[in-house]
Image (cartoon, rainbow, N blue to C red; front, top):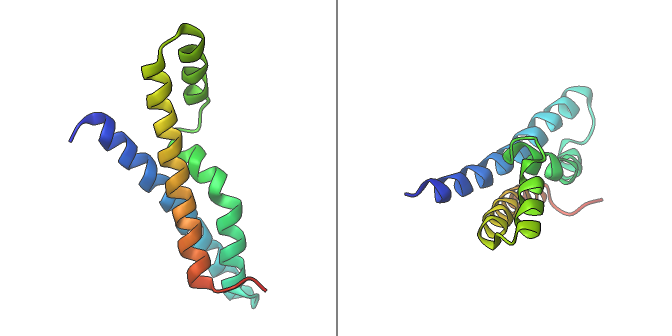
Length: 108
């Protein structure tokens, strides 16, 4: 597998893991304190989507900077690659959110 495809796969699964892991561990705290853990899973999954993307992209603004320099420099290949990284990270984070909200049931 090429390095680019493996990097896209890493971005997807890192953001998926941040959302699912953070939500489940956060809901464990609610279970210990007597709150509603399933409701908390859905709320935390929604809040952690952006942080899943940030973690998957390395926590820096290098992706945004690369898109900017690619657009200003006319390097469409760089813009396309960075956009695919963003899309992969977003898809992983959103997949985690969708899976957890399906498991948690409808919001109350």
